[in-house]
Image (cartoon, rainbow, N blue to C red; front, side, top):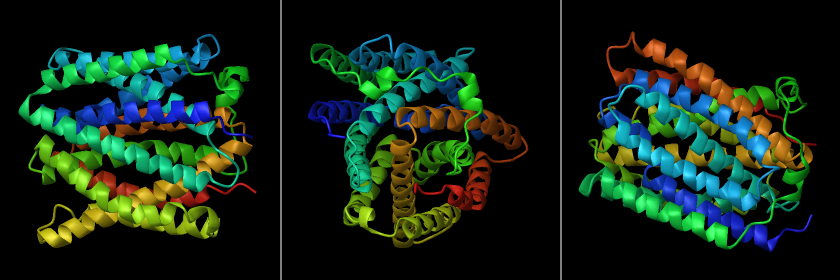
Amino acid sequence: MPISSEASRSFHRFLGLHAFLTGLFPFFIPVYLWRQGHDAGQISLFIAITGTGFVLSLVLWDRIRTRLPFHQLIALTFLVEILLLSAVFLEGENGFLLLFGLLNGAYNCFFWITQRALFLETLALGDTGRKVGNFQIFVMVMLKLGIFSGGLLLDVGGYPWLFLFSVLIAGSGLLSFQLRQVPQPAALQQMPPLSPRTVFGFRDSHGSRTVFLLDGPFLFLESYFWAITLFLLAHQSFWRLGLLVIVLGLIFSLLFWLIKNRIDHLPVQRVYRIAVGGYALSWLLRLLVDRPLATGWLFLLLVLITFATSFFRLAFNKRFFDIARQSGRHRYLLLKSYWSQAAIAVAFPGMALVSTGLAEGTRMLELGYLLAALAAPFYLLYRPPR
C-alpha cells in the first residue's frame, strides 16, 4: 500500500504538538497529585477511573469517527486536553479525582487512538521496526522538550502560568488543523463501530487478548509509579525530575539509534524474547533505586532500566503493528485499547485496597514493581504473525 505523504505530515504535526503538550503537564500528573498529598492508594484509584474514562470515551470515539471529518476528531483531542488542564483548578473539591480521572481517560483515548490511526496509515511492508523506532525517538524528543518546559514552569511560575502556556499551544494546534484539513483514513472511515459481541468475543492465534489484558496495568506502572519513584529521587522537584528524565532520554536515544534500523533484519522471535527478559529484569532493578548507592551506580542503574524498557516497547510495538496490518488494522487497534483499559479499570482498585494495609506509600510502589517482574514473562505468550 503506498504511503500518503499527507498522512505522514499530518501524523508528525499532530504527534509533535501532543507529545510536547503531554510533557508540559500530563506527564507530571502522578507527581503533581503526590505533591498535593494524594497517597499511592488514591493515585491507584485515579488510574482505575482513568481506565474507565478511556473505555467510555472509546465507545463515543468509535461512533463519531464515521460521522465527523477527521480534522474535527483531531480538534476534539485539543479541546479535551484544555478541559483536563482546567479541571486541575478544582483540586481539593469533592469529586475532583473522579472528574479529573474521567477527563484524563478521555484525553488519553482521543490522543492515543487518533495518533495510532494516523501512524497505521504511514506503515509500509517490511519497515515496521524502523518506523516504530523513528516514532519513539520523535516522541521522546518532543516529550522531553515539553517536560523540561513544564518542570521549569511548575517550579518557578506555578500551575497558572503552565496552564496559560499549554492552552496557547493547544489552541494553536487546534487552529492549525482546522485551517489545513486532514483526509480521513479510508480504512477507518469504512469500518463499522465495534459491537459488544465483537469486543467480548475477540480471540486470535497470537494470544493477543491475554497480552492486551496484561499490558494495560504495565503501561501505568511504567509511567505513573515510575514517575513517582524518579520524583522522590529528585527530592520532589518538578524541574529536577524533568532534567533527570531528559538526561536519561539523551543517553537512551544514542543507544536506541543503533538498534532501531537493524531490528527489521534480526531474528524476530529471538529479539522479542531478549526484550521480554530485559523488561522483567528492569522491574527487579527498580527495587534497588532507593537503596544507598553511589551516584555513579545509581545513574547506571537508571540508564539500564530506561534502555531495557524502551527496547521492550520497540519490540512489542513492532509485533503489535505487524499483527495489526494482517488483522484488520484499525479494528485490532480498537480491540487492544478496549481490553487493556478494561484491565486497568479492574486491576488498580485492587492495588488501592492493598495500599490501605501498607504503612508507607512507597511500599506500594515496590510491591507493584515486584508483581510486574513476576508477570512480565507472560508477554512471551504474544506470538508473531506468520
